[in-house]
Length: 183
Image 1 (cartoon, helix red, strand yellow):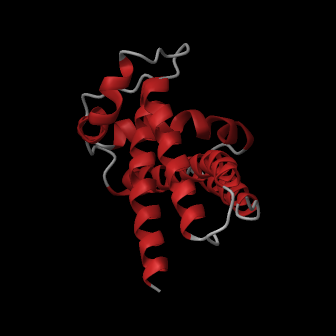
Image 2: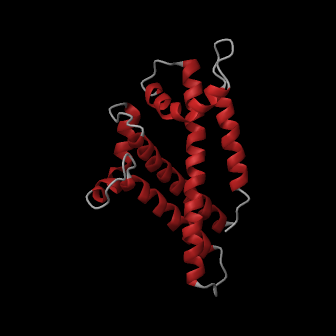
Image 3: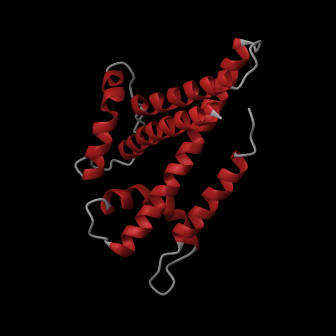
């Protein structure tokens, strides 16, 4: 029981930090301003990991590898710790390493899907409740590229944009498929 609680705490903490780093990566990629309250929060919570790496790890085009790499490393370390905690004592360390690399990559994808799901939901709620919120502009800019293909398929109906529902459906299907991938 205590081992299960420890695993939940580790997954939650690693998932939160990974999501923050991924938000920073996407904001840099989409050139969303960090001047907003959301941007300031992201910078304040991730600078300790990203700033030292920016000196050594160059970006590729608009992709900020100094933010993406720590997110992946966190997921790899989480996968290694979880594999080690759940393994019998005689398990080969090389197998744990391979499982950690694959599990970390899969974990990064899962966190990215979960993060995008929550951002779409928050944007949809804010669009109804308070579209003049200081967070709405950043969240809307974040989701716009993901919603655009669905808006071409399903234009607004009676003034309501239903494309977030389609995107959420696709994200849920992808998440469902990834849940059956076992490493």
